[in-house]
Image 1 (cartoon, one colour):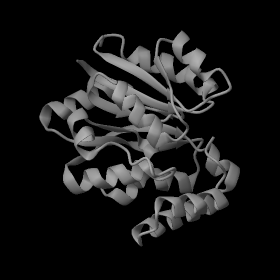
Image 2 (tube, one colour; image 1 turned 90 degrees about the vertical axis):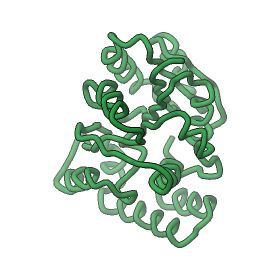
Image 3 (cartoon, one colour; image 1 turned 180 degrees about the vertical axis):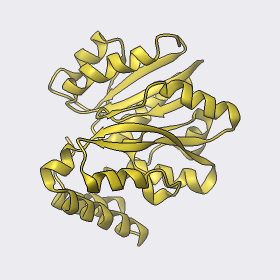
Image 4 (tube, one colour; image 1 turned 120 degrees about the vertical axis):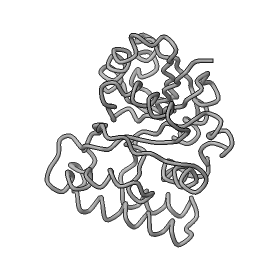
Length: 232
């Protein structure tokens, strides 16, 4: 069994993969017991070809991050699963940080978050990710966990076309331990730039509240589709 499987859901992410995959492989040079899996939801920009050219295992799956990440996990051979968005760049030595943490104790976890480019408000949002509470979690921070925990939880809930990361992380907090590692993962702030920082954060907060008060996965998606552009 491989030690670590990095699973990246993609949909038209060719430009990002051209940077991300060499970066990941550079961090994994001394660790032959790691693999990178691209779970692609139907890209039309050459994402799958680039993934193969740059040495990743590439899967074709139906569109939807939960579906894609479950497919990647099913294909994975790793004892540890590491879910990573294509527009998030993990810190240098991320692999050793994850292994070092898991040598001390069984835990799920993520990294603190930094937005690039940033502003004062986004810096404050990033600072909040050091707090180890479910409200401060999100998929952009990436997620690592023991494979056996992922399987015991049944993986991502494929009913969720949005909020799939938060829903799984919520179950992890309730049943297992969760650790926020100090190094920062860097994620793109392009959506905040396109839609406005406060406007977008307001809609994200409404989604959280709707979920808290029992909204269905479909109701969450309808709100998101109406107020936030498709994630594409």
